[in-house]
Amino acid sequence: MKIIISCLKILTTFLLVVIIGLAIFSVSPIYQFTGPVPFSGDRIYNPYADFDSAIGWKRACLHTHTKVDKGINECPYYPDVVYSDYMSYGYDILAFSNHQALTPHPVDSSLYIGVYEHGYNLFKFHLNPFGVKKVEKFDHILPFLLSQKQFMIDRLAEDGDFVQFNHPDRTLTINKKVMEHLSGYRLIEADAGFGEWDKGSGSALVHWDEALSAGRYVHNSINDDNHNSKNLPAIARRCSWINTPTPYYEDVKDQLLKGNFYTTRVPDFGNDSAAKHEGNLHLPRIEDIGMRGDTVFMQLSSPASAIRVISQNGLTVDSIFNASGISYVMTPEDPYVRMTAWYDDGTTVYTNAFARYSEGDSPYREFPHPVRWGMTILWNLLLLAVAAASATGIYFLLRKRR
Image (tube, rainbow, N blue to C red; front, top):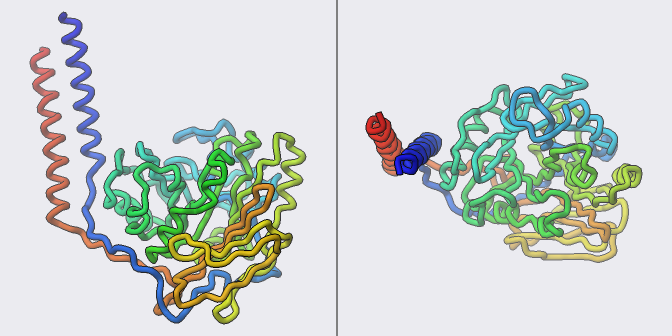
């Protein structure tokens, strides 16, 4: 009986310690959010206004993992091996975004991109801050509040140049309401499945359309989120094609923020390494894209089985089949449009969004979210009370044990 009581005391003490930790890592301001504000205005933003066909596209993966000496290891190979593997598939730009660790470039320091994947919470709410010089160590263990998510976006955006919202499809507590209210991030991994395990459902880009429909202007950046560069079904499956003159960060950053890039979901090509390499070197590409007046257009290097123009609430407003190009006249009822091309082998090409606006240089807006001081004080006092009560419980348990 004494053994059982001792075990229960130990278990209770452990649970109280966990509660204290959860309380400490739940501290956050509580914000007042601005709800959906669809794009409007007489002007239409063209993310490809600076597209230069002479420069062409540089293939990029902005989210992948390697083995690191200090940090969380989720990959068996060091950066030099991963870099070599990606280059063999025709990549030009590779960002090493290891968890809570900045990773030096293994070949050329001038190609270094200061980015890491932030977040060790249990909901997999992960963000990639770009242009940072240090790692933010704080995170909410259970970021179930909308305000907690916004707090981390703001905190990381202040440290660097911009923030990417990683894999919302695989993040717990992400829903339409969250996407309609969060702001401050510039890129989103809208198609974020691993390989084709999602059976193609991720190609709908639901969460991206929820954000766009709410007036949150962000660009779609899809990546492998690779954890093993020798695993053929996992590498070179999702990528961005950036119209940048060089692979150096400052040029890449400028084009990412403008939206002067498109993304591709790549087929598996099977377990034949030679076939996979060959297939990756001959993917369909966008040859021309832009806007003439109110007409958006796209021309592909080879005919797609279907090309669709998608607008508010993710609804298809135009489509064409077995064609290599499409054009669409934006109507006043279209707050934004984006284009997607599907191929029979599973290749999917996504453009960024053309959106209406009236002021500034683009539809991107900093949505105000002032602190609700009364709720903030109450929330953090509650956390303090929970932590204090748990600490008191531990004190009496240990005192009684002595």
